[in-house]
Image 1 (cartoon, helix red, strand yellow):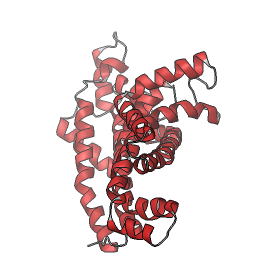
Image 2: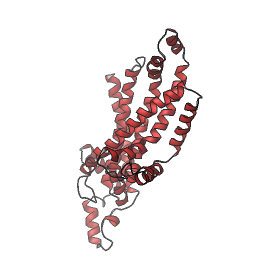
Image 3: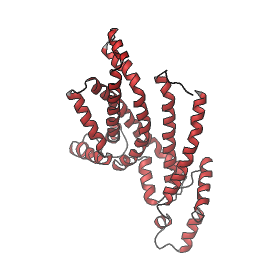
Length: 305
């Protein structure tokens, strides 16, 4: 297992290099931030000084190598807008983002997996048809539309929850539910599909023939063997979750990294955008590495080579 882990870590190096290149190039495609940060009537000397101080007067290839070397030193540069270390700005808001993302993923797992199991067990019944219909709706509805709709219904009309901001657990309900809705739909559909395959296997019939309770057969034997594809989907959806949190934080005025990223994009604050992209990508890589290592814990038949 140690050898497998080391090999997987080595394979992430090209991924990290690719992340550096993509995040650097995409930010530069938005244009020169000088025009947005400095006032329109700023003299040419001030513009040239701003570009020189922030390294924007250097050739693009030189800017990239400086950016990459500084990243590996732990220096993500200073925000062009706030004149503070970009990493500090991002980490100040990372707690709020992780709170929202973890809450959404917890809801998705606790609701999606049992729903998929029940739908598979009650195949072609009204319960199963309802689950499939809601899952289809959940994957088709954009998160920003669902967020606005939930604000109108639950915050404006019913006044059950706050419409935005961060404070008590009530502030977390609407954004976490909105962010998790598509994940619940996807996890429920994948769980249902995998459970249908497993419930028809010979060892499930054997377990029932031995007199095991239906609950033990379904929730222990069947679900455990059907869980690996579900776990893979959960790991891959971390990327969707980190992308969706940007839209959700903007809709609900949640003071997290996603909202900061949107503001930085509008201001062409290159260091902040690059820091957000790099950290989000690293979280995605680490989570998927953990998912790979969990396979053997769930199914002992899987070995590491």
